[in-house]
Each structure stands twice: as C-alpha cells, then as structure tokens.
Amino acid sequence: MKTNPAISRRRFAGGLLQAALLAATAPNFIPLRLLAGENTPSKKIQLGHIGVGYQGTNDLRNFLTVESAASVAICDPYRARREKAAGFVRDAQHLEPVLYNDFRELLADKSVDAVVIVAPDHWHVPMGLAAVRAGKDLYLEKPLGHSLEQNRAMLNTCREHDRIFQYGTQQRSGEMIKRGVELVLNGYIGELQRMEVWAPGGTSGGSLVEIPVPPGLDYDLYLGPAPMRPCTADRITNKGSWYCADYALGFIAGWGAHPLDIAIWAMDSDTKGPISFQGTGKTPTPNGLFNTCATWDVNIKFHDGIPMHFMSSNVAEPLVKPYRLDTWESNGTTFFGTKGWVSVSRNSYAASNPAWFKLKTCEGTKRVLYHNHYYKSFVDSVRDRSASIAPIQDAVRSDALSHLSLMAIKTGGEVVWDPQAYKIIAPVELNAQMTCEVRGDWQQS
Ligand SMILES: NC(=O)c1ccc[n+]([C@@H]2O[C@H](COP(=O)([O-])OP(=O)(O)OC[C@H]3O[C@@H](n4cnc5c(N)ncnc54)[C@H](O)[C@@H]3O)[C@@H](O)[C@H]2O)c1
Image 1: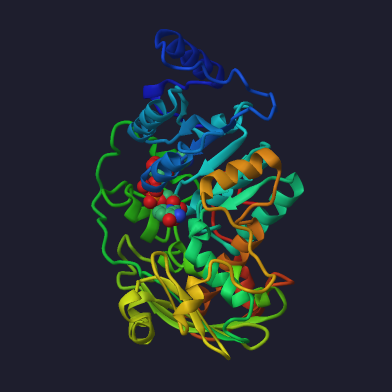
Image 2: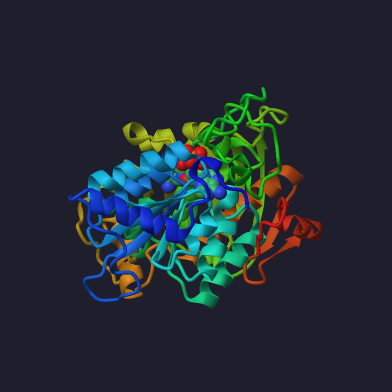
C-alpha cells in the first residue's frame, strides 16, 4: 500500500489521537467519536467521505447541512484537497475529522457508519465493494461501474451484505421532476409511447505533456485500478476524471446518468425482456487525453416496443427545442403518450397541458419514494434501515443503458440485451466486453 509520506502513514489510532488532541486544545471543538459503536436515536450517523474534489466537496457541504449526521473522516490521496475539505467540517460542525490518504484505512475505521464515495468513475465499484464488505452503507456518485460486470457485482454485494445504497442522482429530490414522473405514472399522458432523453456531450483535446506529480498527491493511489500513465495537467483535474477513457465512459454515462435515471424512475419495462440498441457517436480526439465519445445519437427499443431516443444535447436541440421553447435545457427526459407529453430537466419542466404541473398532487395512486433533502434522505435510511430513494437496482438499470449504447456505437450494429439474464444476446461476442481491465490487485468483483 502506498501512502503519502507527508502525512506519514497515519493509522486509525493515530488519527483518533490527533483528533482528541485537537479537540482538547480547541475548546469549541467537540471531541469526536464518543458515540462510536452506540446506536441510540440521538446518535449522529458518522460519515466518511472518500474523494473530495469538485463534487466530493459539494456533497460534503450538503451532508454538513444534515443535523443528524457528522462527517468524521475524509480521504483523498491529494493532501491539499482533504485538508481543504476538513476546513468545511470544522466550520460547519466544529468537529475535527480524521484525514486519510488511503480509503482502506478509512474503511477499517469502525466508527464510520456510512461512506460517501466521490472518486473518479473507475473507482466507484472497487471502492463500493470494499466499503460494503467492510459493513458500511453507501452513498455512491453516479455513474455506477466501469463495466457491466462491476455493476452486477455491486448489486449482488449490496444485497448479500444488506447495505443501504443511494446513488448520486440528486435530481430525484427535484420536486417538479418528481411531479412529472408521477404525472406519467398516473396516466396523465395516457399510454406511454416513446421517450426522448438527452444530456450534455463531452469534449476533445486534453494535455498529454508529462508534468512532475504535484507534491502532496499520491499518484499511484489516485490512478488505482486504471493503467499507469504519465501525469499531465489535465489528467489530474476533473476533466480527466470525466472525459478520459482510463477513468470514465464519458458523458454518455457521466451526465447521461441523470436524465436516464428519471426515465427509469417512471418505467419498469426494461426489467421485463430484451432491449435493443442501435446508434452512432463521435469521439473527436481518439488519441488525445479526452478520448471518450463526445456526441451520440442512439435508438433504444424496450421489450414492449417502446422506443427511447438517447442523445447528446447537440443532437437533441433541434428536436426538443420546438416543444420546450423557452424551457429548453441541455439535459432532460420527455415522455410522450397517447394523450399528451411531460418533459422534465434539472431546472425546468413543460407539458402538453401546463396545468398538470400546477397540481400539487396528481390524481391516481402511484407515488414514488421522495424526500426533498437528498442527503438527509440517505442519513435517514442509514439510521432507520428504510428504503433508499435511489436504490442500487435502479442504478444498475440506468447505467446499463449507457454501457450498451456505447457498445452499439462502437460495433456499428444492433446490440440486444437481456436484462433478466444480464447478458448480451447479440452479438454474443460482446459478452467478453462486460468486464474491464484492472491494474494490479485492485479487486473489481
Ligand atoms: N451528481 C452530480 O451531479 C455530479 C457532478 C459532478 C461529478 N459527479 C461525479 O463525482 C465523481 C467525481 O467527480 P469530480 O468532478 O468531483 O472529480 P474530481 O477529479 O474533482 O474529484 C475526484 C476526487 O477523487 C479523488 N481520488 C482519486 N483517487 C482516490 C482514492 N483512491 N481515494 C480517495 N479519493 C480519490 C481525487 O484526488 C479527487 O479529489 C465522478 O464520478 C463524477 O461523475 C457527480
């Protein structure tokens, strides 16, 4: 295991001691972990944050608003980032979190009830599996896995260990998005006939010029399961995390996860039988650092024949703008039915009958699980052992749509998927691509 020499292999006990010392010298700081191991109604759920870059810091700051939780541990192989994140905890909760370079040490910390994993995508499932096996509940950022097999392993392992899983699809706490989904479920649009789903596309370029690894970055641990490559300025930013194929599928999964999740929330036909995928996509700089698919245009057909047109926003714009008009956004999900349509995006919505969105509660009995505070909802589930509002099975379903769309683009032909058997029916050779390579001994399933 490689650790950052600057933090000199701090172990759990050492971290505890340091936290206690800091607490003792800072009168406003409450000593940490006095409640560890207890499980009383007044106990705060103790969170460990793994990955505190751009989104990890956003998620941390959202969790810091949840009174029933305490952020007791932070891990990032980038020292400056974990130290900066610790400052937010101090300011908000007057707690001194224990800082870790290596997430395995955080997972061994028995006082951490649940973890919030916000490392780059290729880390999600290897870390998620290790967390669940260590007995932690899991808030895992989207997208799910780097391969379809990783997703299956994550599902099975969550079930086997009976852990709470909440996916990082925070749009489920958007009230108007929830309302749109319930309009669809309760038949306002009549029978569902087709869907349009779109998300921002990717980018091109990215620096390939080698630079020295910045001080305070444990580069080997940063790359983890990904291939060892020269460090470049863009590789170690979130553009690298989002657009480089070593770490991600690109925005077809990274951003696609959000509007696809909303489609999955409102339908279950993808659980019943084969789904087919056919489409095209472009990777502008296949030899650059940002070498993932940047634009896509995929036709998906569900087992009951319902089509979904899944597109990058540049492809969607001429199709969607004519009916979204001044509510056009670069992401969204539209449900077209026999009696009308409903369309929701992150910050806007529209319907063939605008009065539908004015209804506080729509008629009909179908309701989705909803909480207006996405992060509190996770903490509540951990404490009460209640159902997650974004469970692992939905994450597996929506993420499969991205993986299989990309496979269809790459093969140039039709890909047929059997969601129940969890395998590719045609072309069968593609089943060999349901796994991904992992460097060293990083376990993936
Ligand atoms: N839900 C959303 O709306 C949303 C928005 C942005 C990003 N995300 C997701 O969040 C994840 C992170 O994206 P980002 O933009 O924050 O990227 P980022 O590069 O800014 O942050 C990733 C962080 O993970 C850290 N990291 C790398 N290896 C690690 C390890 N072994 N242990 C602990 N930490 C490690 C990095 O040092 C970095 O600080 C991605 O999966 C992305 O898809 C979600």
